[in-house]
Structures are given as structure tokens and as C-alpha cells.
Length: 208
Picture 1 (cartoon, rainbow, N blue to C red):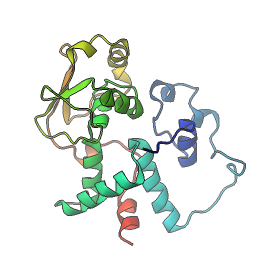
Picture 2: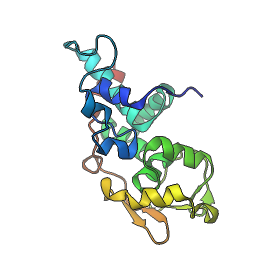
Picture 3: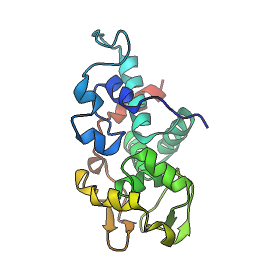
Picture 4: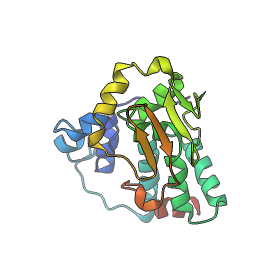
């Protein structure tokens, strides 16, 4: 499957704000946005007024970059959100937040979503004591996410858990640090999802 393989800091600079794609580095003065506060490329320092369509497109691209999903996956999530009751934009963010790779990141097992995706693909995590290797797997209320017994001693997991204070724990999930298990308490509401995304612009873009 195609994946973005260029420098992640370019994505943040393109959006003009931190998307926290590189984990701990984003909290230091080495962050690309802190060092060069302009878009990448030859014409990055030129100021351009964006059209309504361009603003909508940038919001969609921003959401895709944050969650690390491709266009086809993102569109599928949007149509799924449209079919659910409630506000389509909020439904979309709830679905993206419920992906297993995102949950692994939110619980502090990984420093960023790209690392979380890799850990899930390598079979380190279980959902309700059953191994799951699908990053897009959607967790539900009451699900317990844990580590395989052999994976609990991974140094990278221990380091990430120790650095969890950078991000804090979302109110819709609970972490048992001693048992290395997390539990989904409820569906995340929009106010629980701290993201620099205007989801209504995404809805407008796909509604054309």
C-alpha cells in the first residue's frame, strides 16, 4: 500500500501548525515548525490567499495527515459517518479516533500514530485478549486493549509509557499502567478530541 515516505515535518510546515507527527521531537525546539515557520519548497515564503475550496481541501489533508490514512480509507470513513445519526463531522472524528492505531497512541503505548500502526501490524496488541493486527480496527465501548505477554518487556513500550505526561490521557479511555492495559469508557465527544481541525469544512468538501 502507498505510504508517505518524505520528511514528516514538511507536512506540519505545509499546514502552518504542529500536527505532532514525530512524537517527542514536536515538544522540543528541534520541531520543524518552530525552526522554519513557513511552507516548504521554493515558494514557501510567499503569502497566498486561499479560496473556499482550498481551505476545505487543506482541512481534509490535515485530518488525513494527523491520522495517517490514505484518501480511499478517509473517504470510506466519511461515508460511514454520514450514515450514522448525528453530525457528520463529529461522527467522522469519532470513527478516526476509534481506530486501533490511534487508541494505541492515545493510551501512550506509542510516541506517534505511525509507530502505533507499526506495533499493531507486528501483532503486539490484543483487544479483549484476542490478538488484532489491523490498524483500522474500530474499538467499542468496554473493549480492553492490552499487550501480548511477550511484548510487555519491549523497551520502546516502557519508554513511551514513561513519557505519557506530554499528552495526558483522554477522558473517554482509562489506562492501567501497572497492568499495561487500557479500557474504552465511552464514545469520544467532539470536545474530548483536541485537534486543530474544522471538520465542517471537510463535510462541505465532500458534499459538493
